Length: 337
Image (cartoon, rainbow, N blue to C red; front, side):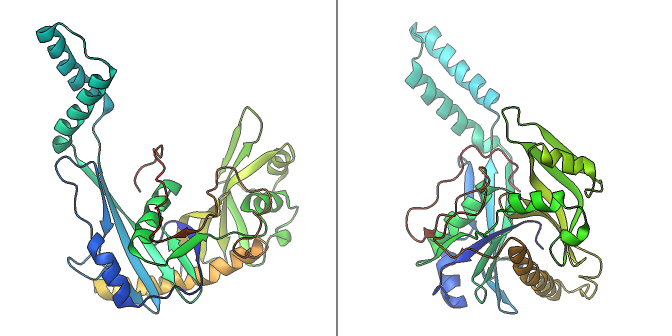
């Protein structure tokens, strides 16, 4: 059900009813891109049922799903069509279009080509745990997380949230775990697995990646001692959930291990959806506190930043709806999902 986890802390006092949430999201239901529209964002039923509710409550957990559809035209195709229009203007009028007119020609070319472009759609799950005050997104990049947060704060009056911060940064903790001489030095219940990425902080930005490799060894410790810092580290919790921890406190490649979903029913999609939510959130509600404790505990909102915060991590700025939305990362070139 979840492949990624980015954890936000909800500000106290926000606890809307299901009916209020449904009413707030309904005006922003997803509508596919129009002929000349390059992007469309909106909420879809989490169960996948047409015209179904936009908010599901399963075992007290709120589940939402945001759809993002994009259409893209290769830049070379746009430039070629715009150049053809510019050549026609020059041939018929004897003048060469200026910069402003050339820009307008490219915009016209894009609008003319968009109806022929294929639409690409992805969906991002959102889990709200009001009891623990968490909001979790299943987005694979910070740019997509920004899209989700923007959509949430536009929909819900009074919603305030910020990235959860820990007393020890993930990078500092991962450095200590990879420097350990023995597995007994790792946090209780959490094990280092067989994948990591180390990156130097100097001008060369050299990168060392280990895959399917035992990491409790002198070679890894030597790289760490030379100043290469971990940006990703594969870990597991209690032999039940595997994940890759990033320097920005994101969990990637989330994998529920053998035995976790053994009791999942087969056949009935509705029962399967409910069971997936119960099992996945049940495991994560135990994993998240264990991981936060391993990182020195959670910092109260407004506290100082964690030790050695990674430069690439997003800030913990609090966002409140319906104020100005977060700016979308314009240069996010990662795949939609």
